[in-house]
Image (cartoon, rainbow, N blue to C red; front, side, top):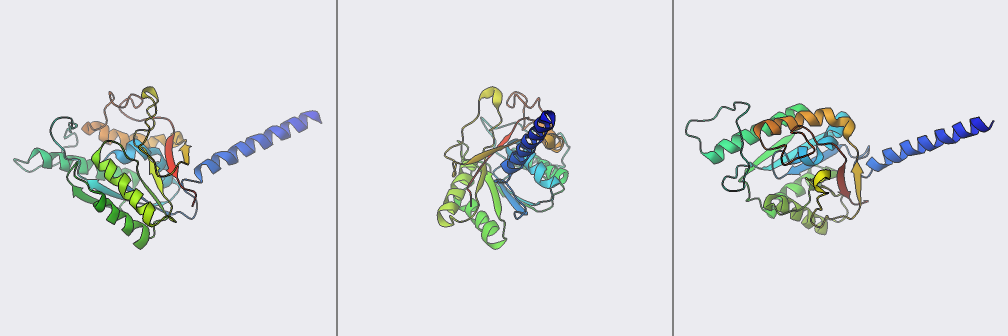
Length: 255
């Protein structure tokens, strides 16, 4: 009898642990949130910051929409090198900015194909010039006109394009406080370098979603950007040039 009681208590404990795991994802998405939108400053931000979460949503049948705001075509000191690994057809005498734009936008399309997502928009804003007003207009359309009930964007950091997305969401929250707001810091999972603290997330509540079981799709997404050289093993020490492991952090409000 005593053994049966111990086994029963163990079963109940494991079951409650399972329920707590499910609950930990509920602040991120639930059954009523079937339309999920992401605004992305650059191609690869979605994969680095939320590739596992996006893979989870795809596998669970959520309708995803992406707005890629910039072309990632910045050139000069401090910008990343982009290789034409996939032999994108480029015009003769193409400028360096246009060359970079065409390759990076092609890589984003490849990732959309991996996700089997056809619902995306590309705004072609020059790298480093994205404004809060441009992002805010897109946010209003998605939230209010098209009925997306959960929305994700990046938290702010020193990158001006990331910051424009962050400030646009701040403006949205001030004007429409009763909507759901979700943010993901792009570089959160760098355990070897310490967790990157985002700049003043809009909400103090957060959940760390374990998405390792969705690593296969995330690996394929990472590989595209790694091949063109925007994801580097030296800069992503836990990725091995292919994939980052660990949880992805989502900041949320409880509405």
